Image (cartoon, rainbow, N blue to C red; front, side, top):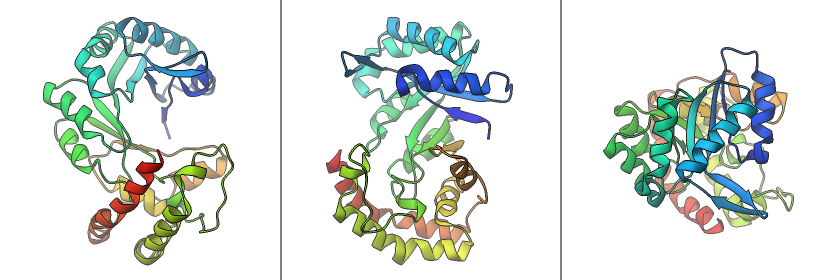
Length: 274
């Protein structure tokens, strides 16, 4: 494992600092971070101005302890921010100055195509980070289109709020500060688990994979995907999320892909929860 993704907003810079300390002597480490979110007076403020991005990049480099950021991403910038042009100009300046090697866009969770299409049409940037997993396959056309044009693709949220780990039950409870406490309503949880039990876990058994391995393997079965970034908090997560992965049998991958229409109803319920 040599690719690490973070953001200057995570822990208000603390995540970058920890990553920098941990990987300072690792010449093989590839570091990606993001810019565009600020905390002002305890509020999240979006700032994609040229002045801020250039200043923020310098701060990220310092926290990471590096001379160059391998992959710098606009953090969930929307179409109007891209059309304004300042953020794109800033990224190109940083690339010309040698402070970043590549730049791209971390796309919106549910509707990634507008921003992706804009950059693809104008041939701007080098890659996209987007949500793509066995449940949320909305970005599949973007994945194929972008990869076909030479863009790198980072797949995030591979386990969809933990639903694809096989560990959640219909009576699972979440802490009040856990986003799943409102995102995974009893209805969403029940409908998701029913579909998983009926259609998905039998595929895991056939492939001789755990639920987590199946979820990760589904993603890496697409050659268009450059890498996948599961959340990791413990050593156990490292083992679960990085071992035993393989390309699925073609018919199994196609079967899981065709379930997207059934997942769409559940995704719409998730979207309503925010």
